[in-house]
Image 1 (cartoon, helix red, strand yellow):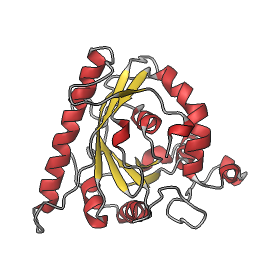
Image 2: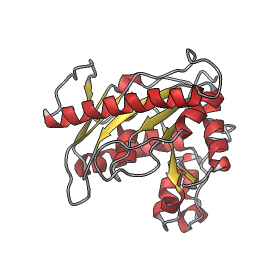
Image 3: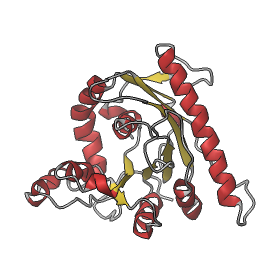
Image 4: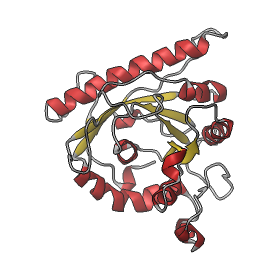
Length: 260
């Protein structure tokens, strides 16, 4: 497992795989060397953070629980379009999101999102190419972001979760970092306060090998995401206390120097 999570010119899996578009054809990604890690640290931390903070006045909790180095899978519930930016804003590590193929097909928008390291997955089927890319990224020491539910939940409660995040973690022997988001009914017209709570990394070495290992690992992840989501909802309802009942400390948006 790599000691350092930062990508290098020789880190093939972490290089931006840009959706074809006019800005990419002009060579814009070369400004940051086609490196999503550098884009997150230098550009997005300074430019996107104030915009996201305006769109969703929010706080993060437990941000120090993200491993400082090594591959990992970030697994979070999904309630609103602001979820990816919020997770990225409060994560100490660059997140390579698994994003629905339809989103990355949107002209210009998909191109911009792909620059951040996001890569497509075909929903409703086993997408082996997406699985291979996710595994390659965590093998190189990066963090892959997954919404295990597969789609946004319209009820405001975390939905049934699929095993993709757990499968990546089990195949590559990396932890799952669970996170709970309370962003229900957020929209550009309803810029409500939101919260994200990161949990302790989950490992599965204690689970016996066999056919049920994946199911038991998924159950563990799902249970923890629901618990964290409840804490995020509590944080919003109580006006963002400095500390949550489980000891999670409040953080504002991370500055570039706070990123790893």
